[in-house]
Each structure stands twice: as structure tokens, then as C-alpha cells.
Length: 196
Image (tube, rainbow, N blue to C red; front, side, top):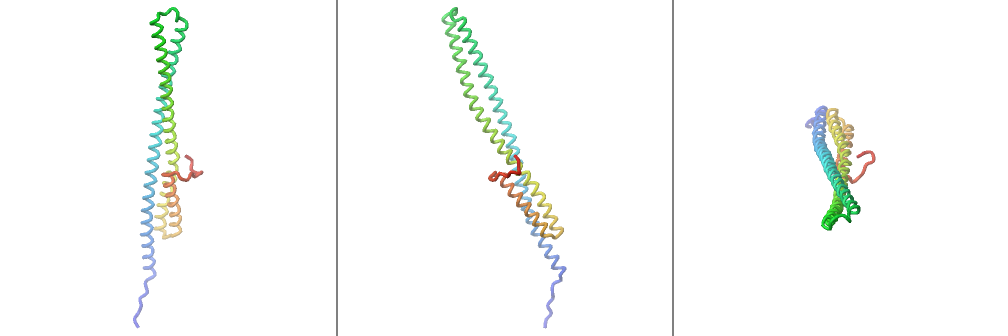
């Protein structure tokens, strides 16, 4: 009868640990890729939030300039109308006609500035909504990055400690981080514990 050589239990344990480590290393690479997506999303959200804020501020400054011009036109129109009402009889026909035409033009300018203000205000508010949308996205990415970084560390610890339970904790954290990353991009589910 031939002898059957039984594997050395230490060698089996070493092979199992090596295979476990390789699998965890591959999964950890996926965690790192998810972390890169979370970081990219967070950077984009921050950049877009700041850009929208700047553009909204520019629009509000433009709105203010139109308000000043509208007010200036109305004041000058009222002054001309006051002068016409007080000195109208003593003015020549030509002078009176020019003053009335100027007052009418000033009224038209004031109306034009008012209409322009309405459009500028609409654009500024739309930019503020865009800013707020990106502001709401940012915390999702921040939490996702933190969870994914911790998941990578925990996965590394699971390799060193040869501990499957530690890896499960790492996996749960990574999946939560990946979910938050996806939600940061889409804002499909508003999570009450994440303030924006």
C-alpha cells in the first residue's frame, strides 16, 4: 500500500492566509477606486458651489447697479416734471417740448431698468439654487471619503491580523461610503443626519 502524504497544517494555514491577503488586497483596491470617486465628487461639488456663489454675487451686483440707474432715472424724471409744473407757463414751446421728451425718455429708461432687474434677479436666484444644490452634495462626499479611508485601513488590518470579522467591518464601511458617494452625485435620498 502506498503512503499518502498529508499536507502540513502550517503550510495549509500559510496558503490560506496568503489567499485571504490577496483577495482582501484586491477588494481594498476597489475601496481605493471608490475613494477616488468620492474625492473627485467632493472637489467638483466644492468648485461648482463656489463658482455659482461668485456668479450669483455678480448678478446681485448687476441688479444693484440697475436699481441705482432706475432710481436715478425716476428722480430726474420727477424733477423735470416738477419743473414743468412750476415753470411750464413761462417756458417756450420748444423748451417745454424738450423737457417733456426728456422726462418721457427717463420714464422709459426707468421702466427698461426695472424689466432688466427682473431678469437679473431670476438669474441670480437660479444661481443661488445651483449653489445650494452643490452645497447639499458636499457633506455626502466628505462622509464617504472618511468611511472609505477607514475601510482601507481596516482591510489592511484584517490582512495583518488574518481576521475575517475585521474585514467584514471594513466591507460594511466601504459599502456605506460607496452608497454616500453615489448619493452625493445623485441626491436621490436625503439623509437627515447629513446637513448641507
